[in-house]
Image (cartoon, rainbow, N blue to C red; front, side, top):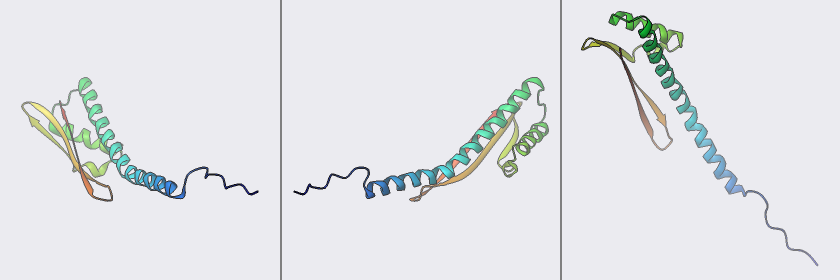
Length: 121
């Protein structure tokens, strides 16, 4: 007498394809988002460094603050961000503002990402 074939063990072909498609989409979005996150954290670090250095050696002019930001951008190899910041004097305080845009392609739409960071000394 012949036995009936056993039920399938493991994942189906369609289930595996769906899993691989979702994994691929996650990797695709992650490859775009992770560098933006690292860039944002680097700018946070630059502003934190300026704030810490200002406590020990106060920055007295807009030109000094501008030079310090440019120097720190060069140290972090972020020379392309030199157009993304402004140093201003407001109400007797030096204000450093970073403002830049990036795009995140989600396949079904391109999402604009706007980043703004401000430090008041």
